[in-house]
Image (cartoon, rainbow, N blue to C red; front, side, top):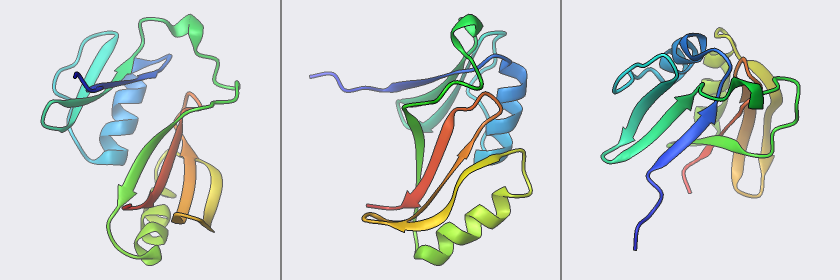
Length: 121
């Protein structure tokens, strides 16, 4: 049975979003087009920015989904990543705190898309 292998994040400015995610995740896109920029996060698995429908992105609208980044290590590793991201162009949505699955925090990209950091499951 097929499994999901492409995750899209809607953005209003593909160039700005590409620079944001390239810097934040310290990775290069597979290719760059004016409206679509994929990053290969694992073999055959893409995280992509999609600017083909900017009319569907309202930065101030509440988001109900999140991009997740699970980091190895202890709560200190999550806190250290939070501290390093504070020097980048992120908006803090939730400061580091403990949840049932461990230490976590949430930031937002320039379009309001949420990015949650947590420990590896």
